[in-house]
Length: 209
Image 1 (cartoon, rainbow, N blue to C red):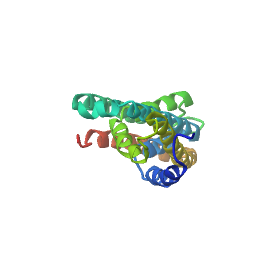
Image 2 (image 1 turned 180 degrees about the vertical axis):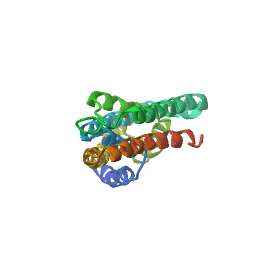
Image 3 (image 1 turned 120 degrees about the horizontal axis):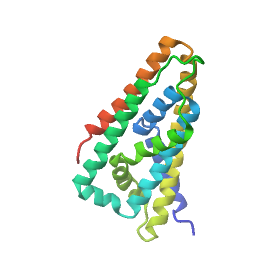
Image 4 (image 1 turned 60 degrees about the horizontal axis):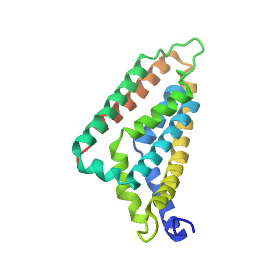
């Protein structure tokens, strides 16, 4: 028997997709990676974010999300680690020289971009609280909980993979073209750093509730 009722899944897909289409930290991070390092890095970061979403889903299903919510100190530690990491990425974008002889965007290894996307997602405690609030609305308590969470999390992550991937590919194409101009390339690095810095500020100012 499939873990989630077909009608429930049919109602969940458009709701999840609507949330995926809402601009958020994951989408902005893929945008910044695409502008800074091109399409391959953006897609690698996108897959890292999707994996992070599944990890958060698993943690929420196991009840750790409620634990984080009940202990503000743990929430704060994770949040400020996320702020520090995003600021470190912003500084790295500013340090990168945009004047390479090949006039290309600053390359980032796909493996590194993947781990950056994963860490940005995992160090955002708001994600697990969001999943803990959103997914249970589509969970049938008379059925095994964990399989339902995993199926719904997989569907939600796949929707994010498609949406954020499209944003990253588009930004990567723009980045490759802009990088051919030294002046515009300098602004490209600044824009990427601004995006990462804005995400850090957003996380730092996040309400504690």
